[in-house]
Length: 66
Image (tube, rainbow, N blue to C red; front, side, top):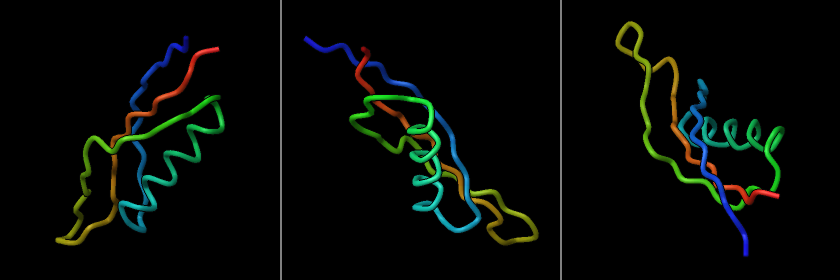
């Protein structure tokens, strides 16, 4: 029987939501082992001078505990 844990992280990018999601996954895999899934919980954008300056995503990461 496996036991999983879910942790939530926030990542950002100036390139788009997909890039922000990938950045979050890259960072999570650097410190977490046994990642089995990821879910985008929310997407937000930072606006400066009427233009999007940064894309942000909140991600739930699921991983199996050893």
